[in-house]
Length: 189
Image 1 (cartoon, rainbow, N blue to C red):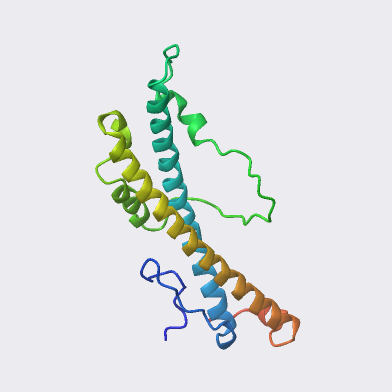
Image 2 (cartoon, rainbow, N blue to C red; image 1 turned 90 degrees about the horizontal axis):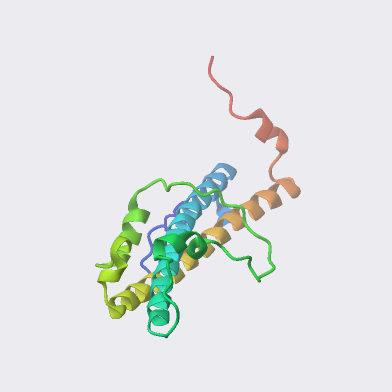
């Protein structure tokens, strides 16, 4: 078994990955595994936000179509004008400790490509050209993939937390020393 592979890195969707044996890794390996897990988690966070934004836009378009069937005064707002409202995050009702993630463009273009591929034939620039059934199918695909991405993110978070806990344990129990960390490797002249 490859011990330095980050869980969630290459598992098939829906597959249950094996847990990483952090006790058998050296400090440098633990730090590398933690860093890699956090980087991949940040990349997945980016993908998840892309997916959530597209889900919100599709839902808003479907809601608009439903409201257009009801008698009321015509609205001057278009979907484009409503984007700031659609994409704004409402305050969370869940009270829990939040994990700080610095979002940026992912290291690879694979995440943008994944989000684009999941849209299928439905392009956000021309939602009016698609039937409700097409929008609902795209919404179902995006929602299912967002759930899968969330599960992979949670696994990466558990991996990073496990590495941090093991590093902390080693320092607390004297298996590792701060002096060694501060001294660092000797550099050649």
